[in-house]
Length: 489
Image (tube, rainbow, N blue to C red; front, side, top):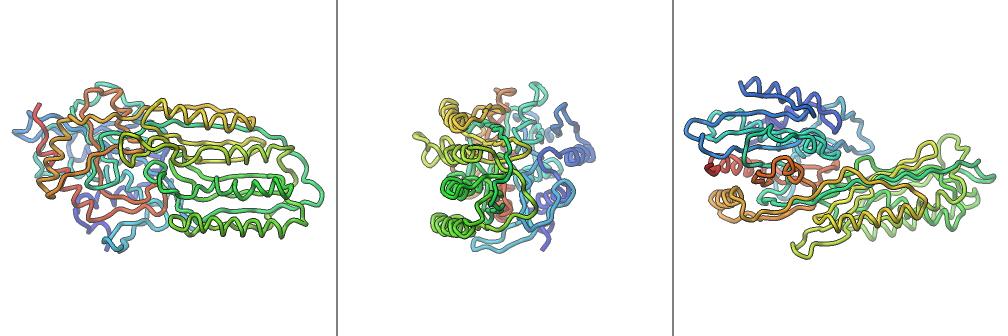
C-alpha cells in the first residue's frame, strides 16, 4: 500500500509530498519554496524571513477570535544517512518509502536511507491544519525553520515581533503520549590536529580497516542505549597496532553528522609486512569481543582487514598517529551523567561524531548536550583536555542553553485534559535530552507558552528510522482537539 492511502489521509499525503523534495540540511531552498506556494494556494499570508524560515498565517474561524494564537513549529531539513550499499543522492533523489509489519503493527520505513519523518511529519501535520476546512481554531501560524539538524540555524536567526502567537506547539518530539516541557542545551566542539608526513618505512605495507554494521542513531534520543560508535571502535582496533606492531597511521575517517552516532569508519595503516597475520588476528579478536559486548544493541558490527588499494607513499610522521588515537580513546563519549532530579533523564553526553584526515590535518567534531550549562561546560573541558594533551587545538561554538520546564503552563493543562478525554489516560510529562528549538526560540519570544509533542518514531538519524502508523493517527486526533480547545486570551 502506498503511504498516500494511509490514515489520516491528509497528513500522509502531505508527508508523501515532502518525501519527493530533497531536503538535507543545507539544501532546504526547494522545500521552502514548496511550502510558501502551498500557503499562497490556500489564500494564506505566506513568506520567508531573511534566514529562510517559512511563516504561514491562518486567521481564526468565526467565533474563535478570542482564543490565544498558536504557532505550530517544525523544521524543514532532514538528516542524510544511508546504508553503505545504497546509491542515493540526498540533494537530488526522493525518499523511497515502504510499509513494514512489526510485532506492534505497521511502520513506515525508507528503503536504505533515513525517512525524514524527523521532522517531515511535523511539517505534514501543520500543513493539514492549515488546509483543513472543518477544524475550528483561533489565530494560527506555522513556523518552518531551516537547518535545525545542523546547529539550529533558523531558530537562532528568528527575529522578535515577527510572529504574533502566544503558544508554541513544537511538533518535533518522537514518542506519542508524551508531552515534553524541557530539553537539553548543546555545544559544538571542533578540534584540529596538524601532522607532518614521512615516507613509508621500508618493509611496510598499507592495510585498509573498515568498521560497518553499527546501528548509529540520534545522539540525543539514543545516546543512553550504549550503541557502538564507529570512531571509538576504530581507535580500539588501531591503537594496539600502533603500540605493539609498530604501525604507522596513514588516514582515519569516520562519521558525517554531529547529531548522528557514527555508524561507519575507515582507516589506512602501514604495518611491517611480517606482522600482517598478527594484525589480522588482532582484528578478529577485537571483533569477537565487540560482538559479545554489543550483542544486545549492535549485533551486526563488522570489521574488515585487507591490503589497501592504490599506492601509499607516506605515513603520519613521528608519534602523530599514536597521539591522535590516544586522544580519541580518551575523549568522553555517550552518557557522562544522569540527572539527579528527573528519573531516567540523561544530564550530559558527548557524541564523538566526525573524524577526518586530509592534507596534513585531522579534523574532529563532537556534539555535547546538557540540561545544565555548568555541567555541560564541565564536560566540554574534559573534551578540551583530551585533545590539547595530544597537541590539538580546540574551540567551541554553536552553544545554546536548554529549555526549562514550566509545570504551571496553561497549554500543558489543556493538553493533559484533552489527552485524558480522548484516550482515557494521562499523558507522560517529561523533559528530553535531545535538543529542541524551544529553548532558542524562547530567547526571541520569552512570552511563549511552549509544549512539544509528536508521533512515535524509532532510530531517527539512521537508515533504520521509522514511523509508527497508528501513533500518527492518535497524534493527529490529539493535535486537532488541542487547537479547538486553545485557551482564551
